[in-house]
Image (cartoon, rainbow, N blue to C red; front, side, top):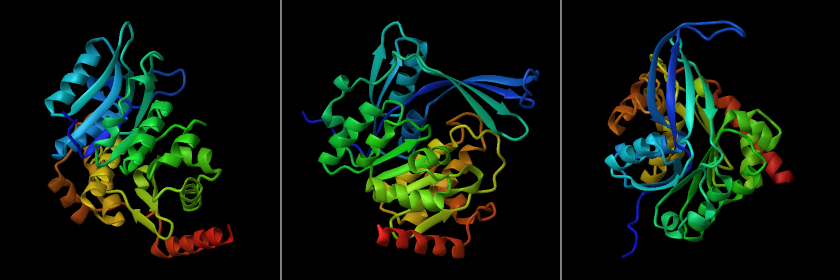
Length: 328
């Protein structure tokens, strides 16, 4: 019996988040008091899958954990949402942990990652049908070899591929040619292109790797995308920030949701920003996952942060990018 076709497949990281809320971040060699301590499930790919599943889409998740209690928690949480789950459970290894320090007054956070190198997605354990019987594939950079193989298989079957990359590694250069929609953190633009200016880096990345659209998330400044002809900018939303953990993951989930719904690019980046903003209003990576209707309400009528880019700046940048493309 063939594997059912799902709308969204994600391959990549999961993590158990130990969240320490601090009165304030300590100075070097300093001390500070904790306000609270929580243990929550997170990880960039697993969180995106959970969000899309909560929004009613058929989903599949491929990942790895240790054979420990935290691995059991991830498997149970995904299955409770009806996610078709394929977890490589590594014997004698510890599931991934993230120690997340959240400043109580601002919601800003720092992440300390603890990774057992044995917990990884092996190429030999992957099945082609997991990625070909899907309408969209989402990959990350945690296991670049496995992500690359999954992306190749998906595109061989005409399945579009998007990605979440936030830490630069040289191996990503071989992954990106197989991605249609790279959605990148600001911090890796310079490593990929040589420029940390998104108005320069996104057109160069889009042209270099041949993707359909390149996008970057910019935190409080919102998100910016380039499709080879035009820039699409969405300002972030003014919300009562409790915890910024998972904001980027929710942007990716919102981006995927919009792609699968066939929305235009401007609506997609705005919806992603609204999904991220709502998630910042609650504790944990998944604490503020709103319904599509709630997200759309914020997108349509929520108060925005000041525009980081004016329409005039974007138009001029598009002209320069087109000029560079013509000369190339």
